[in-house]
Image (cartoon, rainbow, N blue to C red):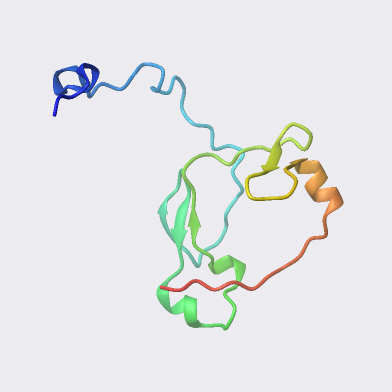
Length: 117
């Protein structure tokens, strides 16, 4: 089987294109302040922390201050009229909503969810 000439091993480069290299450091100044002493912090920026294992079974419902926190970059600042959510695909009618519309036009609800291992 002949490979496409553009895919041959000699043409592959392990160098990162200059367009991918970040020009400035990431800005974490908008991240929330965290004063939680319960979590074991694994990394400060981006923030990654987890509760001690016994804390996960102390209560039937895990309190918010014991949630795992996994982030992969700075906290985004969503501007109400500029950021949109698009719901499309296997729906009868695609919908586009701004963050402001989501907050103003829909009731806030809470649900209980479980994580299975």
